Length: 131
Image (cartoon, rainbow, N blue to C red; front, side, top):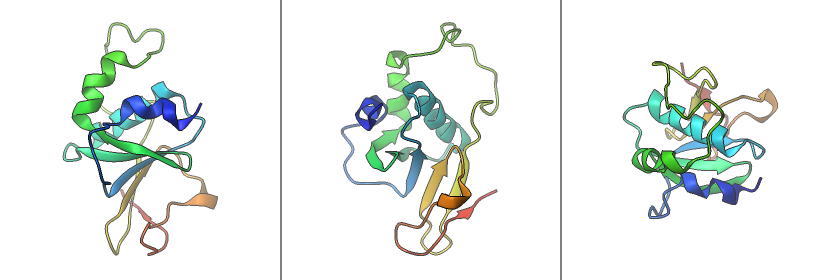
């Protein structure tokens, strides 16, 4: 799947960038990407915008409200028709939060590969895992 397929998740009216980036693997299905993005917003109520990166490509900026409006158009899995969800954290993903100690740049991931830890975009080295 190409990153163009993830365009439904981003708000095309937003220009510029945001310091918080959700990095997703290139082979992640769209429904899983939408769930991971929803988990990022659920885990940080003050966060309104997240840059979405799929593989090595920056797809755009996702907004909380845009994702909520698009939810009805996103393909879902079997059993999702009743929209019943349990309260609390997602059981599918635990969003890992990384932050630069120097400039505050942030990255979110759904997994960590110790061989490819997130780096600060401003060259301050490896980002620190937040509790």
